[in-house]
Amino acid sequence: MKADKTPTDDQARQVGHRRWLRLGAKTLHDVASIGFGGALAACLVINQVASRESAEAFAAARLAYGTIAQYLLVPCMFVVVLSGLIALAATRAYTGASWAWLKALLGLSVFEATLVVVGSKQRQAEIVAAYADPALLDTLLRSERNTLWLLIALSVVNVVLAVWRPRLGPKER
Image (cartoon, rainbow, N blue to C red; front, side, top):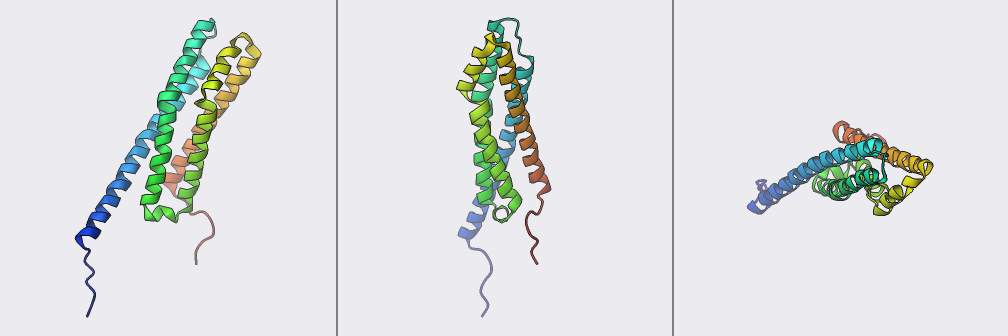
């Protein structure tokens, strides 16, 4: 007597729920990644072209930067990391893929750098306060710009990993 291989209604529902979870997590991940990339680009532009003619104009540019960081950059990065981890957990093929784990680790490091360097209100206050000292201001803005470029580069690496999906580690025999 052979066992019946047809799925039960509960099993079919579970597969359907997992599929919607994967699809939802991937969609959220993609949309938030676009928002994160746009926010990084906007912050980079503000960093490079902020007017230094007056303290008020510079402070206004830094206020715009801080607003983008607080309301777009950091929330998008949070959604990117959370939805990526949900997609990782919901997709059986990803749990054994070393590229997916590398992507998750890079995502967490990008999130930390975003919080500490770019999204920090204290850091923004330091930059505005450094307006009186042009040498210090240049150093702080260069450091911030380098961090933004690094975040952009790591984000590109994450996209490449997601598209390319390389086999990392020893080959199975």
